[in-house]
Image (tube, rainbow, N blue to C red; front, side, top):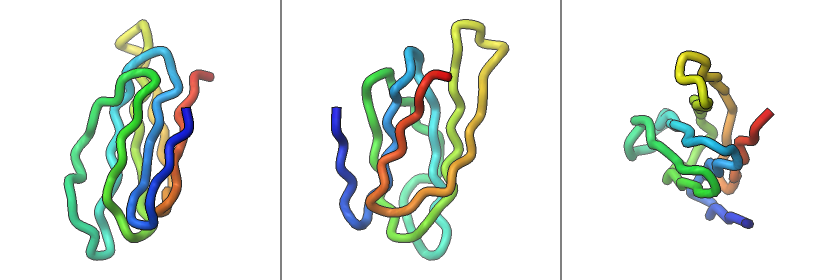
Length: 85
């Protein structure tokens, strides 16, 4: 599946087998929620952002006590795919 983000959006695509939780900061005057959003496998979410931001992604696994976290620098128009290892 191909996802496109506009010049004022940043996307996170869940390309894993499990739900992920993601958030994108809203610094530099951007507005909108900076809370975590759950993204089901094969789905995506778009955040309205006009500036480069930091994304935090929590990858859940079959073993709930073994999650993995990713930190990404993200920019508008970008869609970032989170994959299984």
